[in-house]
Length: 335
Ligand SMILES: [Zn+2]
Image (tube, rainbow, N blue to C red):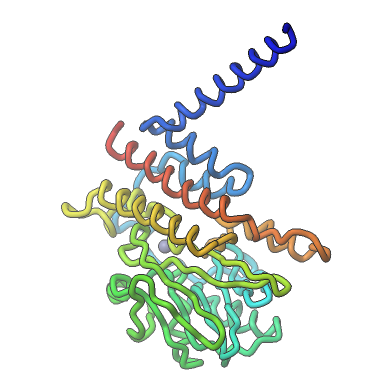
């Protein structure tokens, strides 16, 4: 009897703690949403949580030195080696920014083209180092019109005749940028199926980071085993710092946060429906590529694949994005 009572007390204590945590997480407060995001991030995505849920730094001064295009940084600060990540997916990015190459039976699809200064070195040179032929690049999907992802597209278009794909809104965004840009080419619409040879990628328009950010679902294989990778196309809440480029009377903070939140929820559902069990990002910090690529190099036969996190963790990645946005929206409204 006493033993049974002890068990009952323990259960009540555990339930009480879980209940208190759930209540804290469920609260529509900054702390409540940060707690929900932290729980969702778990051990899988500490950097995503840290970057997205951190209280914002003060806005950058409009028109100040911070907005000037930086000179080409020294190669030693950004160059990294390329890596084979799946049977048909290769990392050909630089230290902080990812470009991904999907190989198919009829050529290569590149997702994000990194900067104009690094594309030839990392994407073209990277493919060659991996034994792949950059002249086979048929498509370049640019997740959004910021130079860390779009800057190399012009080179790939002009050098290899690759078709460049952006959303309509982000082609417009590129048109307003000062940097060299590709000629306007293919326009991604929501749900677009891009088929090359034996491989079909699905592109979804997920506005938030920009008005036309593309998030992509990519079928991949690990030693022949099929998986689906989800690439959330834009991560940070840019309007918090770069207000001049985002905030207008029609589009206050609330607009951007609400748009981002709706897209994160929608893409979470789409990724779940597609059976996505892998996360890849266009920033090496968010998907933990900085530790996963070295871990892959040490992987032994039969070991789990570090990028295969399971569908629950893919959903939690997008929950971090959503919940930190909810916290940010409350911060912006002064609550
Ligand atoms: Zn961006």
